[in-house]
Length: 149
Image 1 (cartoon, rainbow, N blue to C red):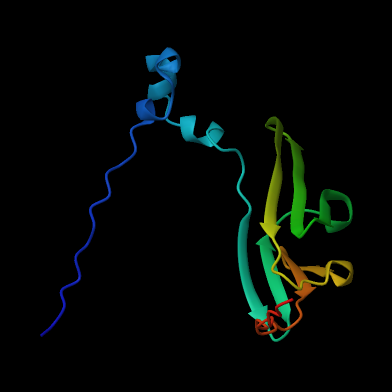
Image 2 (cartoon, rainbow, N blue to C red):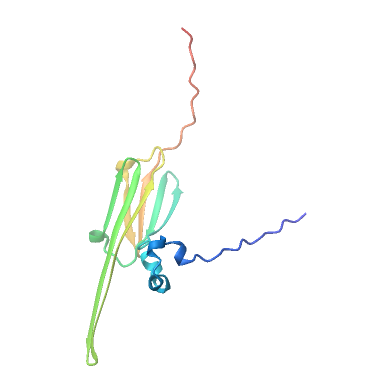
């Protein structure tokens, strides 16, 4: 017997279903770039284990990690905050052009039990922020004997 894989049909999201009825102004819904403002900038993250370490890699191209990134650990939660700022000015014989881009990113992840919050290390290379968190090996559950009095 062979199993057939069925493809699920995904219906496109209609913009008017995402906004409350009192915000359903047709000029807003018909605007082609409305989705840019729905969630704000996104930080792509991957998480995996490498031996006894949890590795979190975040894609953050075009930032200065010394000035624009903050990593905090508190109550078993690792939070990465970053801000991107870029300005470009071009002046030539045909005229002057100025362009800028900016945005803030925040991503929080719950750390597993046994994570060493005080020994977190972070590196930045080629637009990738890598955070390594030591994690103690999980111990097996221990059965607790019950005594009668």
